[in-house]
Image 1 (cartoon, rainbow, N blue to C red):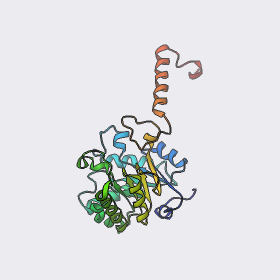
Image 2 (cartoon, helix red, strand yellow):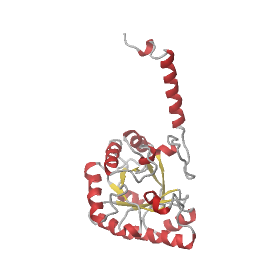
Image 3 (tube, one colour):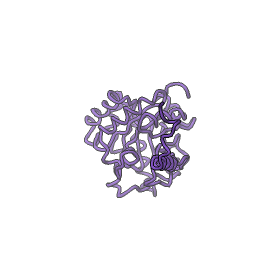
Image 4 (cartoon, one colour):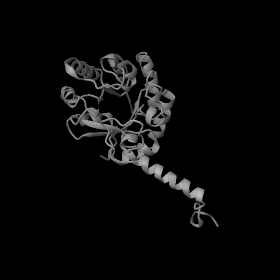
Length: 266
């Protein structure tokens, strides 16, 4: 896809070509993600863990998200650039959410924001979408609610879990979101959600039936290895390759092999 991807483009892909979304955090990761053909680049608050070394996404601040979104925007010209609203930037109410979402669009180059929560965030999502802020929803496992959930637990299991998931999905649609992430739910539950809503679903740990898929850049490339979720497929082992290269550099410096004549000026 060579044309600029917009929210309308994404909505038109419902039940059509699979949507590819990659979570990137800076200029090079956004640049390579776009070159690879991703329709959406999400500057995810997962950067808290895979870039900043936090134990969860909860500590991530607005300033950190704005900084990384600005960097990613410089490598993103065709894909739709979405910024995660970090914990504490929207939970106080619609007005707080509007003020912070506006900063992403005005200061950081984002073209949309993502908000975790379904029924509980419906009022906020509607408030934003009515004020020209495109919103991507996020239901199922909510990483920002890790303490309330008692860990990263699969959602949507059993009759009650499925009912809650479907209620959340409907609330996101009715609030005006153009797409939603469905995370950490059984494949069959994700299928039922996808078939029941009119906007695209983008799965992560939600099986093959969603309208698109997303993985974290550092996870799929094997850069982050503190924890590898079941749903992550490693398409590369750049972490190991990086360590090997750095060890060789260290050895050559210690042994006086580098720099040699080839890498020195006359």
